[in-house]
Length: 256
Ligand code: PGA
Image 1 (cartoon, helix red, strand yellow):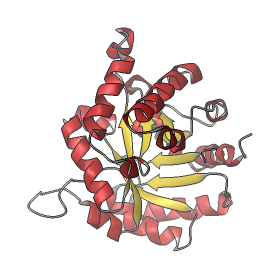
Image 2 (cartoon, protein in one colour; image 1 turned 135 degrees about the vertical axis):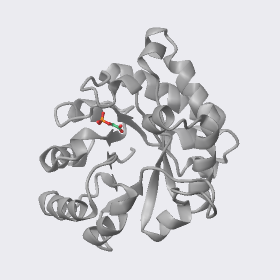
Image 3 (cartoon, protein in one colour; image 1 turned 90 degrees about the vertical axis):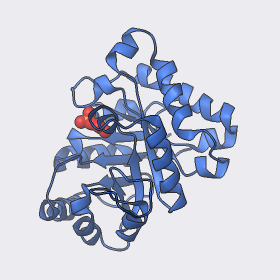
């Protein structure tokens, strides 16, 4: 049984001091639990204060929202995997649709970022997902498969064991229009099959595949009740203490 993972993607929200206050409140509000893992992905500028607010033995892990593929060098404005490790990050979100659509990131960049993350001990959370036009044209599976191919080809089974995949339909992100459980489950199953075919069934059945796109306290329980869905990548609803605490609490209920 895969342990649910809830990732809070803060995007470009919260200052360093707001981050510290939020995390202190969250830790008071939600007890640690062995039944779910939680990752917070604040902006780079809040990673240090988030780390100190989390404390050294925290059950909540730190993640970043992006990474450059080179370890250092003349890349103005970029941040490398060793820098993120040094700040206590264990995870990094890679290939988010906002990076792809607003910042021109392509699969070849995503692949380099996945590799850099793995090389420096960060677990990539690889985002894939189709646009509304793709879905309406019946191209969901081919688009997602192409993104997976473009980002994961050539990686070893050992590498795959460290990766989490987040299925985030672009039309569901920040729109209030979540995919249905059935729509998500179909794509999740095809992602798992892709991993099984490309690597092996042990890796495929151990891999956590998250759903993202307008996850809320209202829909998290039905998403998690589906055995194809291993958690959520949460944007808007993770910025509010009440809603994020509720989402985590649902994930902490032991799965049957
Ligand atoms: P949302 O964002 O929950 O606000 O839809 C999800 C994401 O972009 O990861």
